[in-house]
Length: 401
Ligand SMILES: *Cc1c(COP(=O)(O)O)cnc(C)c1O
Image (cartoon, rainbow, N blue to C red; front, side):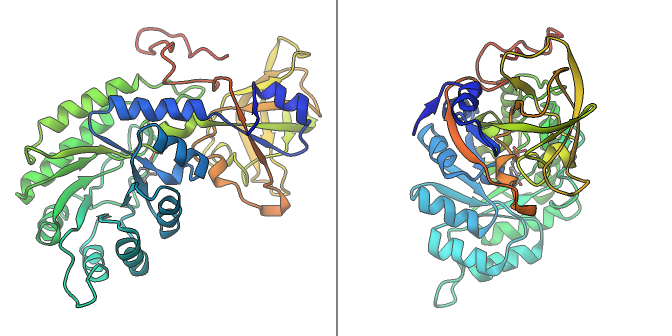
C-alpha cells in the first residue's frame, strides 16, 4: 500500500471530494508495545474501540495477544483474522446463542457476568453434548464502580454492587475453573485515582465473599490526549494500579489484566474533511455526527484540528461544525480553533480519531463513504513519543506539530 508522507500530500494528490481517513500504523504499533512492555500484567485490546482488521493485525504484531470482544460478530472477526489470539467475551449481558458459538466453535473460555441469571446462562450454554457442565470456564464478575474521574461514564449500565457481588462471586466460584473480578472506571479516566477507588471496592467484595480470586481485570479507561484533556503519564496509572493490586487478598499467582480500547488506538487515525460552506463562525464540512465525528456531536468531545495548506492567516478564531446530513443534530459545537480566513474548498485535518471515530461511521442520508490511506507522519498528539511535557510539572500543552 502506498504511504503518504502527511495530510497535505494526500490533499495535493487526491483533492478528495469525500472524507479521507488517515491511518498511522507506526503510532498504533508504538502504543501496543508500550502496554505490552510497561503494564505489569496482560493487556487486552477492547475491540469495540476500533475493529479495523489492519489495526487488529498491527496490535497482534506488536505484542497484544488477548482481545476483549463484546459481541459474536467481534468474536468471529478476530478469530478469522488471528486464529491464535485469546478471546475474552467481556459483555455482561450476552445471548445464549452467542455464548454457545463462542465457547463451542471459537474456543472462548473467558466470560464476564454481573448477575446470577447470566451465570446460569453461561453454565447452560457451555454444556457438552452429553449435558455435562464445562470444567474449563474462566469467569469474571463485573463490579459496578464510580465513573467520577472519567469523561464518559460507564457506571449505570453494568456491574454488580457490593450487596450482590459477594454471593455472585461465591456462586461463580462453584462453576469456574478460574475466577476473576473486573470493572470499568469509565472512558478517558483523567486520574489514576479512579483505579484506586475501584480496587478498594474490589477488596471489599473479595473480603465479604471469602473466595479465592485468580485474576483482577482493571478494564479500560486509560486516556489519550485531546484539547483541554491532558492526562498524567500512563506510567503513573500502571504503577499505582500494580501497587494496589499486589496488596489485595488474592491467590499468590493471581494475574493482573487491563482492557484498553481508546489508549491503544486513538493515535492510529485522523480524518481529512473539506469545508463545503462557511456561514460566519460555522463551517459546513463533509463528515459529522453520523460519520467519524459521533463523539464531537453527541458528547461535545473536542478533537485537535489543523487547516491543511500554507495560504492561511496566522490569526485564528473559534468555529463550530455542521456535518453533511440534513439533520440539525449533525452539529459539533467545538470550539475548533482554525485560521480566521478559512473558507469553502479548504481542507481540515481532525486528529486523534482512531478510537470511537472511524468505527462509528454510518451510511445515513447517503453519506459515510470514506477512503482510508496510510500516512507516515506523527499524530497530532501522543502519549508514547517520549517528548511530552508532563502536565503535573508545567502548564505547557502537548506540542502540536
Ligand atoms: C469499552 C470497553 C473497554 C474499553 O474502554 P476504553 O475506555 O476505550 O479504554 C474495555 N472494557 C470493556 C468491558 C468495555 O466495555
